[in-house]
Length: 484
Image (tube, rainbow, N blue to C red):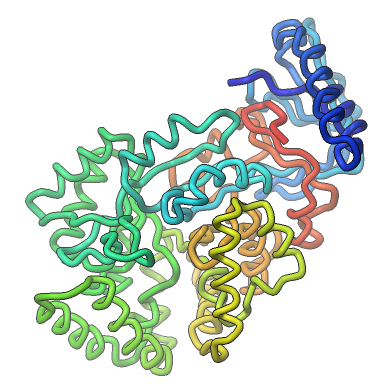
């Protein structure tokens, strides 16, 4: 990993960065000179201990601790103490004064797709770091392509965890047959081949598996068993042949709140029978069309038939299954997040080809009739029910699907989690502690306390006062190094 710049280097670079607007070539040469001069000092000369002083620590579990010192050694937090405490050391300590600033754990996006939009693939990792996202779950794509991408992306880069392809039924939804259906999925086979399928994914570099919507129940159960035998976490949509309360308890996370509406309906059994019959009778065509037709025909009637007692029974089966609502996606067409005043500036950071494509999509959306708000409103309503029944919630965006700018959109998701009923601290936990729990990494990442990996975010204002303050990023640390 290239040596990251010290606070002194960054300060000097910032001091002279104003030249870029008027004399870009001279400014570039000056910054290069600064880098070369300070680069003569190796990290071993500087020491590998960093003390962040006078900082307000915002821990997602314990809350705000004012005026703290955070000691980082070899990329790991080793002490969090008040500013009055003495830090004994025989080794040299580099000091960073963060007075009146707020330190939070690095953020996660629990639902992204690096290979969904090829023009954006290579830019996504840098964008995530720009917005303070230090870890991501890629929840669907060709495992060989993704593993190679993860290996070839230059450091610094976020921690990237891969599921490989969407494990789907015989009629694969994302089969690559059209630009709107890139090849994110694959036929998972049947119950007898599940163990072989999961073993091959793990061998190819997958960290967890992702089960999709047209998988048969027997195959679903076999994939779960195969993943459990290899200690691989399981992310899942609710298969359309099943209900959330039968599939959900066997998964570690469920995505988009999709198909919960059927399970919560008073006539859920009737709707399920109809759905199962249509899938059994489908012998030719596109999986994408089959799935879309079922959602279109059943989603709104199921929401209209909501039964609270039935829904309580369903949600009570999910208290060990993280729900990743992707509220930004579910509300996007209704709330039109692309009309936010800061969206054009964020869009301008994307590759030019992506900008042109997305601007054309925005123009089409602007001409289209207003979107039906029912599912958007249902998603926000269901958030309150999840919280009341103690169902865990994680933060994810589905970037770049639905005009989701990588990194930027995670902050929109945090705001929507608060709109849905979470406190700012709970929303922060949804993007730090909860993703770590999915991977059984709660003891090593996601909080600010000794023993945790030093993936950190320095903010100008307290996010517990207003979750929007997560956008006010002053610096980003990855593994103990300032990378932004």
